Image (cartoon, rainbow, N blue to C red; front, side, top):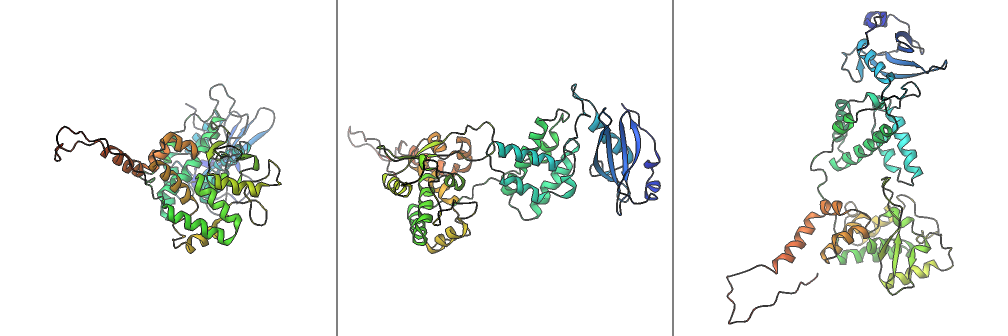
Length: 415
């Protein structure tokens, strides 16, 4: 164990006598390693300085000093706790030179994860959501020094902002992904326990509150969207028929339409969910001949790589462009726009296929999701359907069989 180095900085009274300054005062605590204290208007800041062996060094703030608040070992550190954390950052591990580069903060981990998503054509929107909820202290905290306690405290604070548990889980999942990505590329981070425990999912948060529409309701929404303009109507109709996400619909190209075949279909691009293992292949999703004819008509004269669905102005459908027009269509259809969003058409498509006895695996492929996710999210509908299937095979001895006539198994009537 490294020997603790004494310094005038260990005494709170000595530190508070120092003048406020941007440049920290450093004490040497090991070869090429210094612990600095920067006097602020409020509590001072502990700073670690590590030499790189080539005449240069890097510095990193690691926490607040216990000038006014008692040290907690996390965000507020005593001189001795700051020494321990400074050494934790600078030590060599698994033969990797810990001084070779500057350890990443949570903010830098998010930046790196966002860049990786962008390179893989993933959806970076959720990263911005995490940034909006991070506190300044957590944002600047070094990933290697995170603790489960402070992460859990942050996760629980999100609930106090009236965020739904499922929303909190989505935010924490993105942060965990960013921290895991950071740890994948920094062998000094030898444990991921801090976020595995501190950002554990909130139980029973994924209870399905999905809005499922019946066919007449879906038809009314499509009709009202068409009343506004043909482009919106076509977008909504394709969403209802395929169950694709808005981001997938917006990226459909003319060449994705396969209408010149007896069973027309759309080659729907994959979602941008951020999974590196996901193959970037398009899924063949069947569509009716009438919709294929509509899409063929709007695609005339366009290049194969041109967007298939565009706004009435001809410009692409951007994020949230559909929100207000779709809400007007929903309201005109006699439904509540606060509950029924475009995503309700996806939920309804999945349930419609489940009830029609389409194998769950096929439903999953058609909707670019997994069997596990469908079973978890739509278990009630699967259970209701399984009950209907099993009921026709029940033995009921209360109704005696007349003579030697054996009744045939009842046919399943699809809704």
